[in-house]
Length: 591
Image (tube, rainbow, N blue to C red):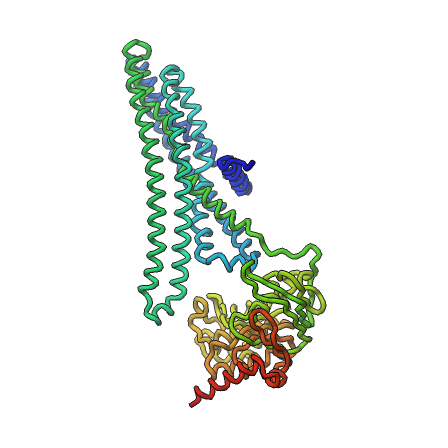
């Protein structure tokens, strides 16, 4: 028999709270000081009704004005201390939340760096950013106010209940009897509010993802005059957010209005019950007045705990989404994995099968043998599996069956870091960081000297252009290299690989998006880059790989033809068809 959902949710929340508490450990001293300050503020809050009662019952009737002044000055001094304590709570208490938020953000970023390619295939950047910013902010607020609200409110309730009991135990019990109504209402509305807040966060993440996509593609949008389409897509997400917010505020409204009604009933009960007690001589007028003043000291912490539900739902929902990222399975080396050292570059695929998911098989029974220092080309229709083959070599994905070997070593037996250290990749879609020319090249090897960076740039035919810039190698390139042309971006990425100097090179349609003149310049740099390395080339222009040591035609996840250019032309299959079609298109374009 399955466990009831309510019990599962309770266990889940308890588990989340245990994980949440671990982030307090580095800040135990600050936490203790914050709690002590909050406790003192609560204790000072009790002083006012005590002094009020004493004045009404004793000092004023007995005309003891000297003590009235002393009590007033004492109260003023205590309020000054309370002001200092509140400053500490608001400043240092919030900073404790910020420290915890920063730690969580660091943990999340570090974990994201360990996650496999497949995670980012299914998680949008904007949604990840939303979890790292919006969610963690609410978590930091919970980190500060949560313990303070719970611990201090509970203590305040105990202190106020005890004090009210000394005034009149029966009137106090009547007030206390109303508390269960608050608890029932809060518990009933809590579940709806939690779901509403979770939906709101999901909608906010969708907006962030849409915004990130639209801003990144703003130049394409302008080029195709499709701003109305982008506005339509954004408004779709915006309406979902409005609906989610409407539901959450509706739930919150029911929550607060119901609780406020019960607290208003408290005051009516105190007024009526206290009036009867006063009429029957069960309580003095001074005590009755003090009770009315003091009852808020009891109701206030109760309301604080109830209202805390909203913040708790915000924070715990954010922490739950944070944990979803943190619980995503990272890439792991096998326990027996060893450092690859420096590989020579012999690549073998043995009956490799791969699928991105159960319904989409991408590679079927692929066998390849690429000798050390050889240039091997992959050609074929788009979507046939060429790029997937390239991604399997650095172990970005795990094969379903079969083996991939480098120098006779199965890649699972090598650590990912040491494996990828031996592989350089130049892709069609170049990613450059919003940094300087120098630092983008240095990304190929972080310990490289400036002289080595210049040497790599010269070999990539980008040095002269860099030196023509006012700030040379210290020139910022803009977000994703927006200030550079396609050819300049490509040459920067080639310079990175020259600096890395790996024995294995993967060129995944590295010149596809370039014009003919730029492609010739890039091809010269690539030809030099290939010297002395095992090179796997995914090519769209077959004329560029005619001199490859071997060519494989990939279609529908299979190797359907393999051989040299001359052998494949003589075979008269798909390669010849592709080559002749491309040659004919080039001739027509030249006319």
